[in-house]
Image (cartoon, rainbow, N blue to C red):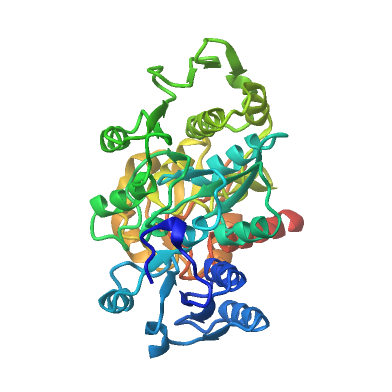
Length: 460
C-alpha cells in the first residue's frame, strides 16, 4: 500500500493490522473499520483490559488475537503500531523487512481531518499546558477539543467529527516521543516545544535519539506553520533554529520577540499592555508560568483574544496527579504528583514546597541517574520511601544523602508516613518513574494514593 501522498490514501477494503489493543489501538481500529478497512487487531498480552477491548471490537465484526502475534499480522497492507512497542523491536524489523508501511495512531488519525492541530510536546509540563490551551480555545469561532497522550486517543476524537463535521474544530494534542516514531505526513498548524531533559533512556539508546524523536513533531512544518519554543531551553533554540516554520518564542526570563513577557509583578503583551498580574495567576510555580505562557502563545496564534487567555490564566488551577493536594492529616499535607515520571519533574516538585518533605519515590526505572536528586533532597527531604522495581538503584544512589526505606507497595509507604510525619510536613508522591511495574498507569497510581491518603484523613 502506497501512503506517500496523503491526499490519495484510501484504506477501504485494505487489510489494516492494529498492533496493540490499548486505548490508542481500540480507537484506531474503530476508525479504520468506519472507513471501510478490513481490520485485524493483535496484542501480545491477554490481560483484562485488552480482552475487554477485543470483545468490544468483535461486536463490530473486527477480528483479533491475544497472547501473541501470529503470522497473519504480516499479511497486511498497513500497520498501525501501539506507542508501547519500540521502533527497534524484532516485531517491527520483521514488518519492515516485508515492506509493510507502519504508522502511529496519531499519524493515522491525522489523515482523516483537515482541522487545525495544535500539538504540544516536552519532557515535562505537557498535560498542564494542553489542558490550559484547550480551555483557551473555547470561543464562538473556535471549538477546541483535547486528545493525545493525556489519555484520549486522537482517532477517538476524529471519528465523531467525520460523522458530524464541525467547521470550527481545532484539535489540541499532547504528544509523546513514542507517538512521533512512525509519522509520515503529520503536520500541526502549531507545534509547541516546552523543554527537553533526560527521559525514557530505557527506550532510547541515547539522549540524542530521544531528542530526535521529540523534534519529529516539527519535521513536516512548513512556511505557513508555527513552532512555539522555549527560549530558555538551549537545546530547543539550537535544534529548531533552522526550521522553515515561523519560530515564535516564549520565556519567563527574556523578552526578545516573545508574544508575552514577564517582570516581577505582571505578564504583559508585546504591546506592553498588562495581560494579568502575577498574583492573579491561579496556578503556582515558575514552571507552571512557563507552561501557561506556552499555551497563551499558541492560543494567540490562532486568534484567541487576550481577554480569554487572561481569564483562563486566572481560573485554571491545574490537573489531577500534578502537585495535587489530596488530604490533610493532623497538619500533614498529602500531595499527589504521580504524573512526575522523570527526575526533572521530581526536582520541580521538591522546589515547590518549603516545608520538610517525606518523598515517596520509585516505580519502573527508565534508566535515570537518581544521584541528580541529591542537591534537591539535602536539608529538605527528611525521609525517602522507595517503592517498585527502582528500589535498588534508588538505594544505591541516595543512601549517603537520605537513606531510603524500601517497602513492597504504596499502601505500606503511606502507612509508614502516618507514623513518621509531623505537623507541617509534606508527604509527596513524586515517583520519578513509570508506573507499569505495579499499576495500570500513572492515573491509577495517583488514584490509589489519593484513596489511601483519604483513608488516613477519615480515620483521624
